[in-house]
Length: 320
Ligand code: ACO
Image 1 (cartoon, rainbow, N blue to C red):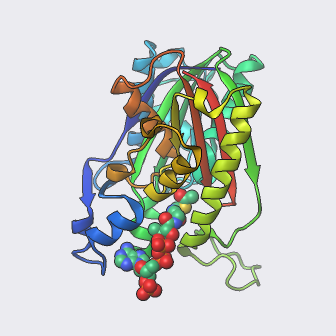
Image 2 (cartoon, rainbow, N blue to C red):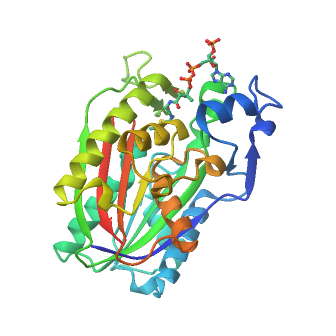
């Protein structure tokens, strides 16, 4: 597998910490000190599927291709108003890819999903089932939180990161893990009632519930374990990696890992300050930003690392 082009798209509206403190008992000082976040983009008048499709379109253009060149669309998405059809299918329509020879599907592995999806794309490409996959991670996490709950709503932003993937030997190693801990982070949507349902309370709606400290501890521990593991699997050492892109959940998590690895600061990229936590989209948005800023060149080695509800974790080594 090889990354042929990247793209990203964000909602128009930027919300600063001061804007949040107009209706929440919070402050710029608290949010900045505890998370590193100063502002984030939040969906207002645009359609979520359009943002996902725009990120995809930009990735196709960056790869020097046209939509008809794509023969598979895979989206990673935790939540949007459409349970069905898939986001990938909606994106296909927005991009004007007629089909029928461009299958579409969605994946969901929470905030760690970006690398889970890369693994699936790699398998499709390497077994010859696809030649050019459009892979999009798109999230509107801000619609999963209770906006009266300062503990959660200040943390998130919306957006989409995309890439076109083709055949190649640049996916050097990956690590995926899962440990059942559903109480640490969850969000429950209501399903339709049936005349036969007798259980109580199970399907009731619940805005995102988060045990922040537990997530923090698990994230720091798993990131160090997974990064060391995946770099060793690739036959490399930590110092060989040019770029570390970690899931952008909290600047203090990135800082903790950076300190433990004793590597130059500039190898750890971050944009949480002005994007917030965009779940599975955080790494591909960050990648697209540093690619467009000219910080990454062909041949550079990158580590991606994520963690999220489950508890799931993931890491990969990719040559750009
Ligand atoms: N503004 C002001 N005060 C707040 C806010 C807020 N927005 N949120 C919480 N507080 C208060 C709490 O009520 C508490 O007050 P108390 O001491 O009077 O009880 C105090 O601040 C400390 O709260 P903690 O939850 O202990 O704060 P902590 O330092 O752990 O920071 C945070 C919370 C930022 C969520 C942190 O635990 C964290 O980053 N966790 C990991 C990341 C994470 O969970 N991300 C969510 C998504 S999951 C994912 O991406 C996989």
